[in-house]
Image (cartoon, rainbow over all chains, first blue to last red; front, top):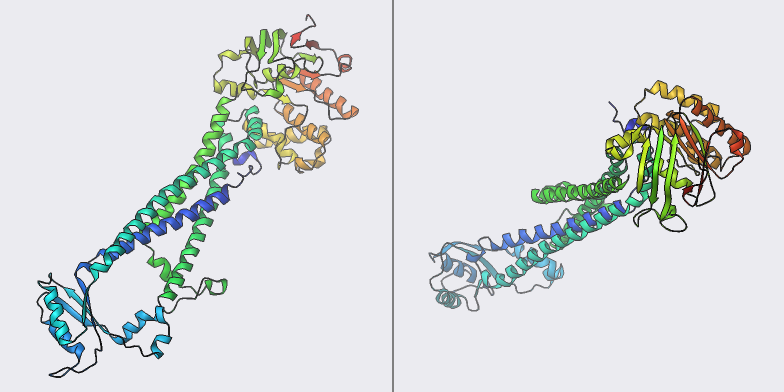
Amino acid sequence: MASPLASLGLPPPPRYPALTTVAASVMLVNALLLALAFAGSHLARHWQSGDERRLTVQVPQPGLAVEGGGTRRDAVLALLRAVPAVGAARAVPEGELADLLRPFLGSVGESLSLPLPGVIELRLVADLPDPAGLAAQLAARAPGTVLEREAGWLQPVRALLQRLQGAAIALLVLGGLAGSTAVIAVSRAGLAARCDTASLLHRFGATDRLIASYLTAIAARQAVAGVAMGGGMALLALGGLACLTARLAGLTGWPDLLLPATLLAAPWLRLLADIPLGFWAGLLGLGLWLTLLAWTTARLGLRRWLRRQP
Amino acid sequence: MIRLEGVGLRYGPDQDASHRDASGAEALFGLNIVMPQAGFAWVVGPTGAGKTSLLRLLQLDQTATWGRVVLLDRDIADLDRTERLALRRRIGVITPVPELLAGMTVFESVALPLRLESRPSNTIRADVGELIGWLGLAGKAAQPVDSLSLGERQLVAIVRAVAVQPGLLLADDPTATLDASLAEQVMRLLWELHLLGTTVLVATQDERWLTWQRGVVIRLAAGRRVDHG
């Protein structure tokens, strides 16, 4: 059954100037801030999980032979595996090391034949009782060997990430407030253009509810369109950033950049599947909030104006 | 019946300045008017006399500052918002410049007040068709009102106002944009409506109409009634 409004044969109501554009801009900015907050939180969690008990040992000239047979790397590994606090000791393969360095040195690094140290990753099951003593033993086996506790250099990284996360959340709140204010402002500004029509319908005895429904439903439609546009642009921007980051990290199977030619080739399914559920929920919540805000502001403004009419 | 007893109107600071009396904020003073149902009245007077203010008061666009107003046997001071809405539906209004919703066709424009009253669609089709045919707009029923001339748009506004067969019809200078022949046709329509039982008030500056048909004359000057009627 047709609604009473549809049966009146009214023309499409006047649009709210700039509401779609403003909603799209607010959605884009806030979606990017939301992504920043999520990325900060994810990184902070990643670097805080179990890294206190990870160590790296660098062995210069790892292939040199030592007394009693074997290489310097083998000797250091054997010593480390004999320490009760060491749960696992793994020699990082040269290929993996080259992959790690490729973003910094490029293919030139391989042709230069740089004397790379051997790297051994350690995972402790308990605190080392005497780290200095162990370092001295390692240096005795293979002079120049260095024992690095990751927690040391991780400390400033963690502090930075925490600050980044806090800043992202603060920016998100500020962006949300500023965006909400902008949406309220444009929804209110559209009222003047509606008064003549509202006045005419009021004179014919149309109810306030019917007039408000007719003139303000478009605010919700425009906000939804803006939210969809802004959200889409944000996903495109994040996709572009992911592709760029993947390329910098030397991962294969990602297009160089999100240019129109490579847009369809981008691994969108992989990208979308990697986005945490919380981000989608936040994006949806943001879109609903902006739509509700635009519609409510427009409706309340018009109802208030109508109530003032005799 | 319409009855105004000692009615005055003062425009407040929050009211539309374009309708203020030229000499100040007070537009009407001590008006007394009595009109029976199905009466016909000419409201005359120079610019700024208060003709439009009186019509705005009667169409419930303004509230009297003083005095008592009874419209269609209802004291408007006693009405709540819903009752005012219902009363408003029984009042037809014709403005000097047609007020139509852009984007609607001639037929839809005229049908709008009827649809707001939830009249059956076949009745609407018949009534609207007859009226727009009578004023020579039958061939333009499906045209958007924006494509019509000013005079044609005024005809549409007039047809729309009379289509609901209102209990009270208020026409403010309705023929200002029409040629002489159409103006007379419109006046005849308003007179016919009065004969059918509608109370009609026509505000005009053209006093030649007063000799065209007899009716009550309400003469205003500076917001006061000066015809001693």
